[in-house]
Structure formats: C-alpha cells, structure tokens
Length: 171
Length: 110
Image (cartoon, rainbow over all chains, first blue to last red; front, side, top):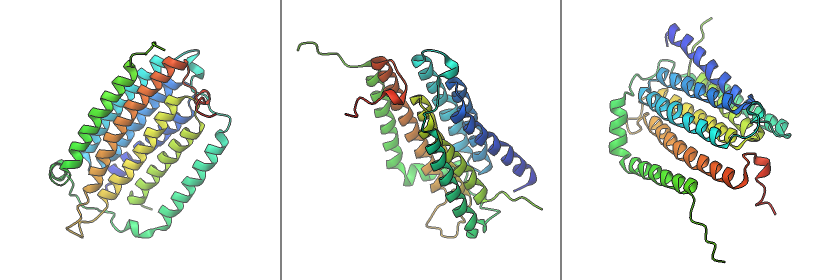
C-alpha cells in the first residue's frame, strides 16, 4: 500500500470512528443522523481502499442515500418537544460503556496477538466488479433472488405497518 | 518507521465501530438512536468481511476470496430491510403511544 493510500486510510478511518462517536454521544438526534451519514461515507472510502468499488457504490447509494434519509424522515415524523434534548442517555449508560469497552479490549487483544494475519501486506489485486457479478449471478443466484424477495416482503410489511389495518369496533 | 496498513488495522477499525454501536444500543434512550447504533454495528461487520476478502490469498482455487464481498452485499440488503421495518414500527408505536423513548415501551413487561 502506497503512502498516499495510507494517509487516505487514516483520514477516513478517523472520520468514520469519530462520527460514530458523535452518533452515540450527541444529545440532538438530528445531529446523530447527520453524523451517521458521515460514518457511512467514511466506511465507503475504506471499501474503495480495499478494492471493493462496487460495495463502495452500494454503500453510498443504500446507506448514505436511502437509510440516512429514512432515518431523518422518521425523526421528523416522531419529534416532539425540544430537539436539543431529543436523544438522552439512559441512567444505566455506565454499564453499556463498561461492556462495550471490555469487548473492544478483548477483540483488540485477539487481533493484535494473532501475528499470522499480517502475512499478506500486498494482497491479491483480484476482485473487480466483473468477478463479483459472475460470482453473484452464478454461484449465489438463489440467495440473490431470495434477497430480492426479502426486500419486497420487508417493503410490503413496512407499508402495512405504517398504513395500519382497519379497526374492528363490532364488540 | 513505516506504518503499514494491513488486515489488523482494518479489523481494529471494525472493532471500534462495533463497540461504539454496542454502547449506543445500551445507552441511548431514543429508539431511533438505537436503530442507528445497530446500523453502525452492521457496518463494522461489513468492514471485517471486506477486509478478510481483500487479504485472503488465492492459495486454494476452490475458495474464491470474493465470497466476503458477496456476504457484505447480503448484509447491506438485510440491513436495508431491517431499517425499513424498524422505522415503520417506530412510527406505528409513536402513533399509538406518542413516545419514542425505550423506557416507556414497557407494557409487555407484566
């Protein structure tokens, strides 16, 4: 990996992690949603650095585009009271911080103590979108269709949930 | 001193995002913030999938490293479905109870 790529990696890794920190610490839920979009963008740049350009495009379209907008719409539809205190913390947040911190220390110990993972600093350059599509449409065609089916069902379910059924008042 | 960005660096970034998301699930009181934290955790898992796919050699021709990217793609699909249904539930709950606070969602308790 060249020096330029290293610099880009560290800039966007820090952007992603710092925005994620902003998501969970911001008291204003609109700020949380905007930080979330920034996190998704940072992760998309990391995908580009990992030679996964199709996933980076899908990340920007699906996460930064669709999911962020849907979250902001849901915030708009459910907001009441003062927006600056719309996302408070529970009074048991220290337990969450303790568990999450402990888990991070454990994962970091496992990652850093396993030296075998560093055997390939210059990895395979293979992995373009063409090979990904061949894999997706040949070997994984049935799961791909199932994913499309799942999205359709989820969309119908979401519409039914929000629209609501008819109340029966005959008893 | 040279800083090399290898597999473990990406895994550390993924672990950081995952643990921040886990903290958010525990600590946030607004149910939409909890959903956002779940999305952070799914993104962290995706980083791990793609990083392993990138740094796996083509040693065994029977195993294509791009399977990691396929898995990440399916995670994106499931995350989209999850956030759609989750936000629909949030809006329905808000319509019935006028709240998005998870502390108030306790009418299933006893």
